[in-house]
Length: 346
Image (cartoon, rainbow, N blue to C red):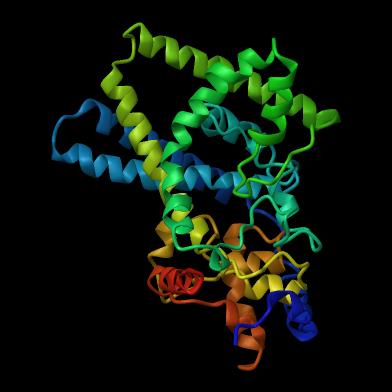
């Protein structure tokens, strides 16, 4: 019989161990953040340029490298949402200037949204922007969920090049844009509230910059300054990157909650770690995302310390601890499990 996540009680020993063993691991290392992000972005953009400019088999390899490197660079937005700006000075601004705005995913689309996913009372409910009970839905929802990610780059160009300028003229469009098209979310029922204060100022600055860039990009393609072929390759590589992220999202959780509020332990067990000895997750679950379940236990621990946190917990908690219940072998186990669950819904 399937365990009902919402009825799983908290394991106080595990929660206490997670808090105690990671107490001194909460400080981000700026050198690691900057080196990792700048290196990923540089490799990604260089490989993208090779894929666009070269017509040879090497262009395909460059395209694969660009997908992986840009995906890793983009994943740092997750870290931005969890750390204080003063912890790594200038990192939010640098990420937005070098990646968020050029790729039309400024950090305001995740800040103020992702933190709701970590809310004790919202996780797994209709108010969670990043949760759908995929394991309890029909089989056709899985391929649809994954393949819609291919449309993301075109949707982003449309949002910033067309809808943002139009929303200056049509207030009702602006309201819809804020509520339903300003979040990197997967729950279609989620409605975002307008930002206030400094958050609103940052939002408008980032959105304006991304809109100017998107309009300029479309204009350069339309006038032939940027060849259509080059733009199509960019969109194709970007689409592969968002597809990879969607596959990672597909196995970030078990998606077995039916809408009830859940204990912290239940949220942990509904989430997924893919620890060593499997090393492929380094590519498809970068920047600490391979320890996604552990992240739900200690969300303020930076990505570069999660491996150490995992090793400490494994060495201390007993075999009967629920901590081991969120550790999985990889895509080859998680995807079939999810598919089998949906097949029972036919």
